[in-house]
Image (cartoon, rainbow, N blue to C red; front, side, top):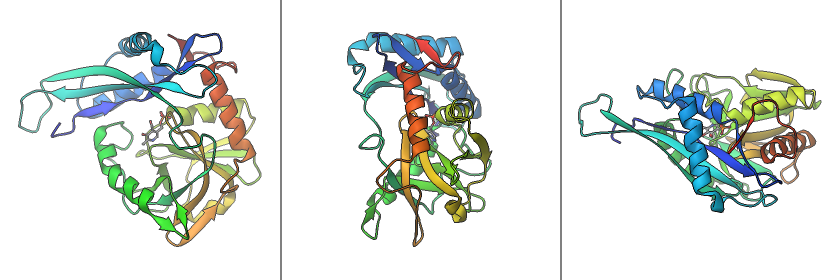
Length: 295
Ligand SMILES: Cc1ncc(COP(=O)(O)O)c(C=O)c1O
């Protein structure tokens, strides 16, 4: 606990229309946990062990899984922690891998309704630090900026969370709270998402890159999203397992407030991405091969 040797994952089980239960790309969560463990010198569960543990936890808690049509799901939280009586700064002598779960609705209130965000002056990760690993220390560091964002008010506006800029230059957007960012160019043709070694590689984001390109026929680009050039984009959203897709109404940066599509309405491309993604997760839209694992 003292040296923060801990990492975790987050994924959901979804009840489909025929009553069966879907896990969404759990192999990707297993791979990311293996990467996080490697970064913190911890042994990692194999992909098979990880998926089997998730399956068993869902089966044992099936009665907590919200019914199809409610939009609810069962959030799974696999984690690895180091345990032992060492006081010296070194790896723990033993490790626990465990999975727990909790039924959830959407992370931001109101489902697919736009939220405003505010740029933080804090960094969540360092250029060669642990930003790409899902480790507790990153989240400990984000609690203060997150609380400040939720307390902030500018011209009567409230904010759902903090936006983090790249730690080296503070000119490019990295993350939106505990979610990745995407933006759609004003002509509606290109899906853009930041590329940086200090961003958590979001499984939802990589899924949306695929959906945008292969299902919506958009150009896709992983690149720089400059905070001073937001006027290129007609829509923007936060994406992640918990956030699903949360449309971004506007971003406050210093005394500037930039509105994308609207502060109250969801843009058309964002809505199509949302319908396709959630359709795949709940089993009403055909999934790309290997994306759905039945419990
Ligand atoms: C910091 C951060 N970024 C992005 C994400 C989104 O990742 P994913 O789509 O894999 O849930 C999460 C949530 O898991 C996160 O905590």
